[in-house]
Image 1 (cartoon, one colour):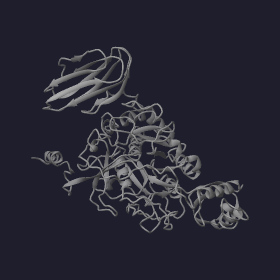
Image 2 (tube, one colour):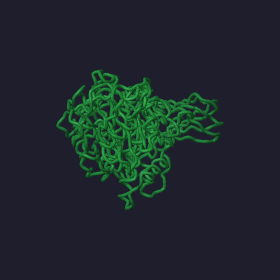
Image 3 (cartoon, rainbow, N blue to C red):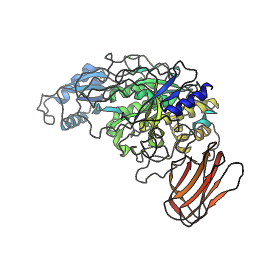
Image 4 (tube, helix red, strand yellow):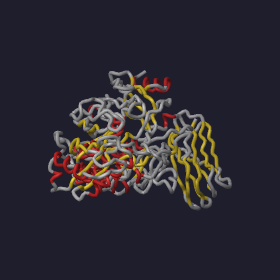
Length: 603
């Protein structure tokens, strides 16, 4: 038995591992399945602010002058519940935009912080003042069982991004995608695609208001390796390390065509890891500096980036609109001015995206999440601010859990890394965003390879939006998640100047009902269904909804078409020992019909 067939046999028999031909490791084990992390809906109290003084003022010149200006702003004033003189503001450092990260003395109530901000914003020398809020990786680690799974999210499946045909044109060569996250591990299926990044996490105190998110204890340095983000519950919710950044980076550019592991959406692009999240999340001030550095801007105390990123992925976020987060908006504006496209996860709170940052910032591509069948993921944020959607997976108890999640790279270490090169299954808009970042890399690479000028961020966004596929399942009108489902193939064709290809026929997956199908009288909806060799039976059905339809099933090679034409929407075709190959399934409206489900089952 050759190595490929041995791997397939192991996969099917044990349901525990994916074999790696040509690798020193016998197999890459599958780790725990993880669901989406919901950003806290109530912002934790903070004693850290961000204050930017107007250009030309004395306070903008040096941190010492800033400290004097802060003292003057508070002098003689009672702030909230605090008496005059009871509060001091101390600058900690200056960000790349010139804003100062400031720590307040004592623990401030939310109302006190609001009062401080009112005082500072009333000062004519202050350009803006905001809370240095914490952002969070948008996923968590429940302990669900799992089965082996293929990358439905990348393929020409119902809910996939149709990457294989895009890869015929480009695989993202020459493009750098910065992943601002928890850092990355040198996973066997990623390290060949890494370029130097940076650890932008500053080291602060160790209390609930200002936790030592750095973990590694050495502040900012050139090593963006993920040291783990586990928590014992002292400073935030107890949990093991997530290896979130490695998972996100793998979706972008896990090495492809190397005979091992998985393939990223842009598997010949480069990933630049920029560590901005640690234990208990990360601060806006560090994230903003990370955005500026990754896009090629200057950050004091940090060597300039030798390989600025064309695309930045932000699979992170926190409560509060971007209108309350001017530092992040300023960093995004600067990055866009340098030609960097910013892709952001919409968030996992099943709420309007306008309530979360950086997803509600201007100029970003905000990404909602879809489930395996192409419908709205149960957790995804929504609203007019969402640009488009991509596979984020969902934990659907009606199918094996491994079929509903996004598989990518990870590690089995509960605190520090075990360096066991696991594949982990996760769900969340954190998983959806890197699909779009990967397609953005393909689009930019394709344009340049075709001899066109590099696309601006607005042009990249326009290409992605104009090339989407309609959602295979109806999205609730009150929970919109953008223009449609990202389509790598159509986007690449548009980027190189070709006309948009015709929309592909939706692919039915055995056992997965395609819901919400609508049409007019005489309208024909056409689908395909793959039947493997030696299948014992094929059943195709329509059911539910309203109106009347007929059903046809056409086997490959021009054999006789099978039909079901009963009144109403309930139709069924059953075939014993069906011919192997691609079957064509057609639903035709005998009257106007709506909310009909189409189901194919192959056994």
